[in-house]
Length: 126
Image 1: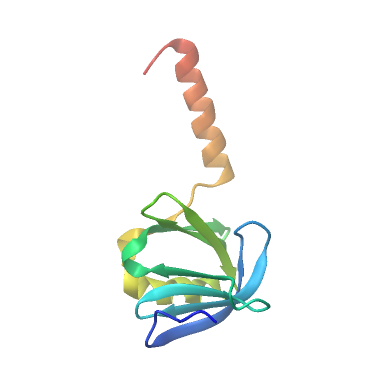
Image 2: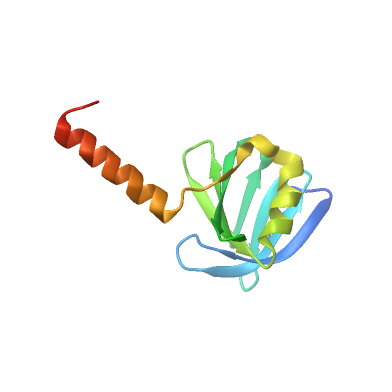
């Protein structure tokens, strides 16, 4: 069984981890780390200390947050979705700060940037 890094837990909520295939379990927001534990296999877990988090990007569709990704300093990221993503990100905000919570680019923004970049390559601009 994995040992939790947290001494106090602010929020425990049902969640899905999108690392590989979708894995169901519980996401814990505590004083030392963000932790995800698989509900079927307790040895399958993700522990991310607050000091290792670079930023968190939330995917917003309309007014609803559908999922969020935690980007760590080594360049990796972990994607999660919880039963209440807004409450989860509010709990996380107390530990990482407002400046590290960002809105991810929408599909239209990504396509627009790609077309703009393609246009610059064709015309030879930098």
